[in-house]
Image (cartoon, rainbow, N blue to C red; front, side, top):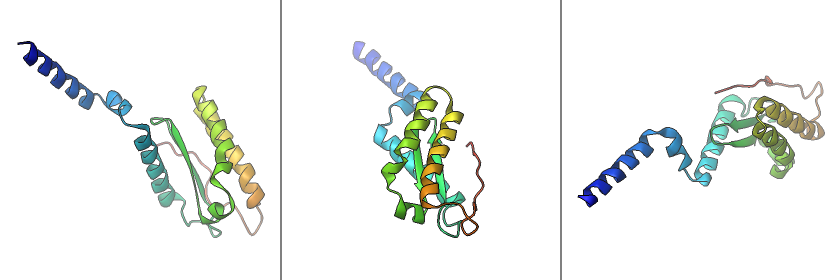
Length: 139
């Protein structure tokens, strides 16, 4: 009877994991979470930003509160001039404020830091206007 009871407990435990999404989500390995966030960010970039500027200078900051991860996805011209590690300060500033419980301020800080980098490489001018709306989109 003990083996039957143990089997029942295992089946119940497995069903609980599969039904209760927060627990299931905790069991997803970090590399898979990272990959999912990157794919989602790239997908949203393609839909909303990719190739929508004359100079190919669109950029997207994506924050996934669920996975506790963020991504910066940039258009061709930005990728050609700005090394990916340059965005580190923007990410650190955002993550620190998100962890402190102020995600809005974190996003604002990341955008400020990104603006500093972009202004250096792509200064705003009559020939290079802001072509995309600057807005937060919550999904």
